[in-house]
Amino acid sequence: MTSTRRPWWPSRADVFWLLLAAFVFAGLNVLLYALGEVTTGPLGPAAGLVLQLVCDFSLVLLFRFPRQVAWFVVAAAGLMLASDLFAPGLFVAVRPLALTTVPTITPVVLSQLPRVLDRRSVLWLAGILTLIAARPWVPSWSTTPFAVLSTTLPAMFGLYGEARRQLLRSLRDRAERAEREQHLLAEQARAEERRRLAGEMHDVVTHRLSLMVLHAGALGVTSHEERVRTAAEDIRREGALALDELRDLVGVLRNGTETVPRTLSPEQPGDPARLVEESRSVGVVTGLAVDGDPAQVSPTVARTAYRLVQEALTNIRKHAPGASAAVSLRYHPGGLDVSVANTAASRRPDPALAGSGSGAGLAGLRQRVELVGGRFDAGPVAGGGFRVGAILPAYVPTAEGTHSDPGDPGARGR
Image 1 (tube, rainbow, N blue to C red):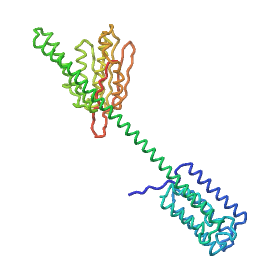
Image 2: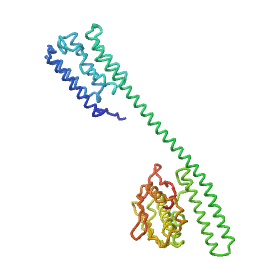
Image 3: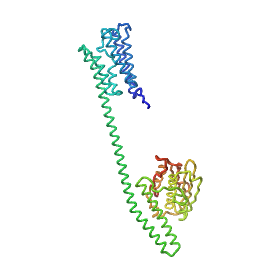
Image 4: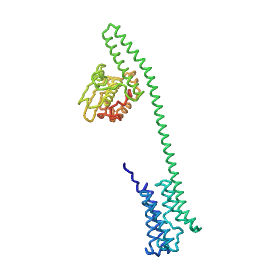
């Protein structure tokens, strides 16, 4: 078990004021000595001055060694009292100009002790010093009032100041705790709203997609034309995939995690090669360049790359009809570099397709890439084309030590 050591001084302001008080009281003691308050005992005429100066400069050690300094001042006061009673002239002058038999630095020490000692210790020390200074066995109007002013009153002011600081600190902590609780309540309200939206999305969109898949399946069964059956099967398959994606998105909205983990595999929709084939099937000349081993990146990063390629190819079909596209995936030990670029469009976009997005696709992609610790960039290239790219890390560590997908925000068209 290690004990924490006290700092020498709580702040620079404390250093300044403690040094200032030490030098001021040291100057006061030198002035009293010069005015004739000297001792005549065997220790010499400056013995009392030396004792006072040592007490004065012990003040700079008060915050590091509070008990030692406090009891040293009490011991010095006891020596001064013993000198006054039994050996006049040893530490206190026979005719002192000062009115008490405690060190002149005592008020400062007692006023600062509540900051570093508990209240009971401060009261005990203040009581002992008040007893020594007041000398109740020989009460006198010339000593008792000044003794109380130089001992009891500074201790009371110090205790009041420390109680006030603790109260303000407690109120500040309570305010910060209330603010944190308010933040947690707001997060809880957002989570409830997210679950509500997830339920509505599931009820509305799933209903429409299910009808589309059923009608496509029925058309594929009843039609006698091969092209119609092929197109119906494509529509049915894409609708089924859309339902799977919607299920994942609803899981993200409800729980903040993806319900079905995805990995890069040629048979699953997490493979960018499948997106390239889909793009080619609808007439977009799309090239694919893969360098490195896909196993070097985690499923979370692979899922992010898949979404980026998917969104970029979707935007090309919407906004750049007739353009060709090039997809580049470079896997390396440090992560994955993704790039999707297209040439200039050869004809005007279809208004129905171009207006079907939300306008937040690139912003959603940037947020998703940055969420896994990557860097995202997008912008026009020479010749009228456009490029979307990202530099992704190899994996995203989590608190549980697993690689979890940060969610599928479903970025939509630019």
